[in-house]
Image (cartoon, rainbow, N blue to C red; front, side):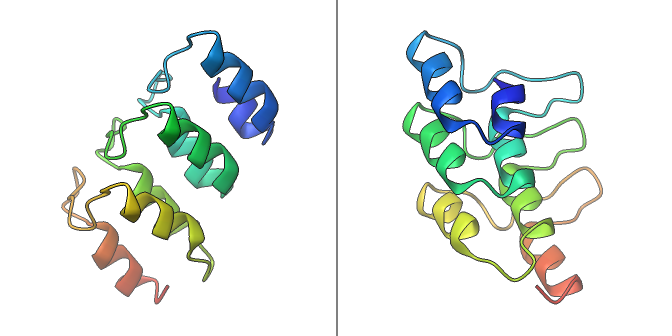
Length: 110
């Protein structure tokens, strides 16, 4: 599932989800497919994962949520952030360094 998201292959991702693959599968650093969709800025992949029940505030091994990753990779774009927020993503969820998505956005003026 991670490879499908990294390749932005939403058709393959949806096929894997239909076959029963877990939307919250984790890699060795705790990244879920939703983290990678945020990293790759793939709104369609994020939508498919959220529709399949992905945990919106899942933490990776650094304590970062998909929203944190989306803020870091947004480059001024907002649609993925809006999508995550509309599904309840917490902008004040602190990672293991005490940083939140809101503080990160202010820090990088994004």
